[in-house]
Picture (cartoon, rainbow over the protein chains, first blue to last red):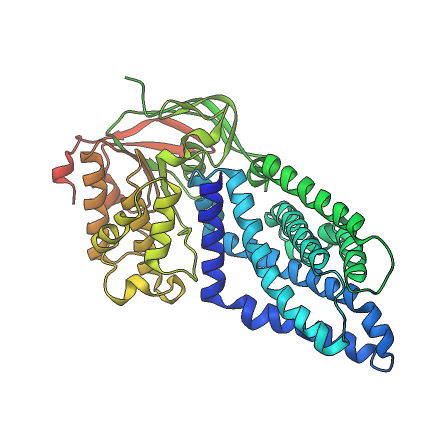
Length: 222
Length: 226
């Protein structure tokens, strides 16, 4: 499985490096989302700072949808999905590889967005370990859930509009948990951020497990 | 010896729609068999079912000894399907596409360069994104993947389409070489002259069913092909 995951993840990242969709379209889009939030709350700097973590994760969520759609669009073009099925690759490996590629793109975008949040909204860091680990768990959870629902929607003509409908309600706990964990890490709330980290890690573990076990069936049915 | 393809009353579904309605077919090792029939007769469905891409829900379907009714995935790594779609990643180069196909098939990636060269993909074409290649060049890259993987069963759906005369000859030669190495070929083609010259026999597909041999030809040895 790991060998196939490395192969598929490497291929997806190579496709993105050559097409530059993430760098030329998704990254500017994510910054634009933050700037628009900044415009909307411009007169209330304190509110912007307090809402920063939530706005950050909403922006990540929207980017996740784009990354997942892109991940399956490259398989839909010119029968590539049949090629992938015929290759004999382990479906669990395909799932892990595609989710890892989405997670890698999201992680890069989060660094960019993090800089944007600091510059635009202003934040102070209190618990860097919580910040990094909760971001890691949330990213894995988003990528795994997105990839799982991405293959569900992949075979449908209405996949572009269906994917957000499927994914957004499912990843609501990630948005909530990551926002709360980050608020604690940034000293914006007094809640125990590590409890939210446990939620994020559990979500990620659950969706990675479900994806590894069910992706093969979903690929066949898509 | 068991036939490479053995279908008996095979019923296959695409979604809920039956695309094979009780197909019977036996293909022996080393044969080149032509599927003929009108558009929509079910030729592509036969090929996809043999590749394990269409679910066979009843009847018998054994390909290379694998029971496709029980596990359609079992045979996939051992067959090669060359159809209307090229199954290439447009943003990757020709070489990257073929190397990916080889690694996925657990084959050494250094087989990519000779296969591309055999199919006339040389020079700047090797490193160019597939999106920048012509339709015929893309089909040759897809064929290079097939040549490099060297599957036991070649499933060819209109293989001559989109190729010029020189590369149609090359394709026939490649297929002949594969059969010479022990491969088996099942193909659908409307290029009657070329396909009949290549195939040892033909069967007719109509309404998702396969009839008895519609025509038999003298078996040609690979050396005489193309």
